[in-house]
Image (spheres, rainbow, N blue to C red):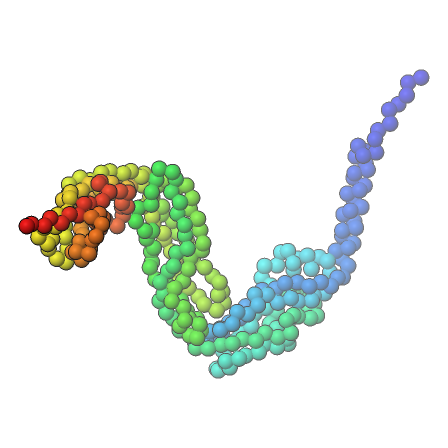
Length: 315
């Protein structure tokens, strides 16, 4: 007699259909029930046009609300309009220290449809306000550029604009002399860099900055080195005294930089000199000249590495 193979329960379509129906029924019933929970709601404070904050107020208030599961779900996950809007823009005079009470916060809750706010935290919000002023300050770029191996950063990065406007409470903005960008690392760079960088917003709601971004330009070129010959060594701030000899009178320099920069450099862009006082006070017979180079290249070495200083006395 042939046995019939029994189908496993977890492979049964009727089982899974029943389970999904049960879950849907339970969810529907649950979401129609009433609940109480705490919801985080953005706090917006609008001041008169001639006043600015000195302290940073909380970004959100915490509201204890009561409502059905459906309405609470909508409030928490779908309602992007909910806000606690404190509008003080029509205040004729705003005290330097102004307190927003718990009642004011609760009355200022907007767009909380079909739910009942029961309580709000914090109990109150204290604002410290003052006269509003605007200043221009330098931008301080907090960026690091690391060229790829075989490449080099030519000169310093350029910032556009060099200055930005900051606006806020005069007691705060008058003490700020620079404004930083975000801290960003550009690694493995092998071509000129042209990018925008955000300015930091650490005093959000207290100090506003315009513009919000700056442009960073940096010239990254393939690295190379060349030797420049026949650089004369000059004596400055005095003439070489009689009997004093500096040998050799000309030198060579080995410099490093971007290939495009080095292609335009000649010996007339470089100078070598020795201070008169250094020659007079020398007791070793070995002197190193000072080398002046264009700002976008660097000195690797000089040839010869030092000069010989001799004093010949005549009888």
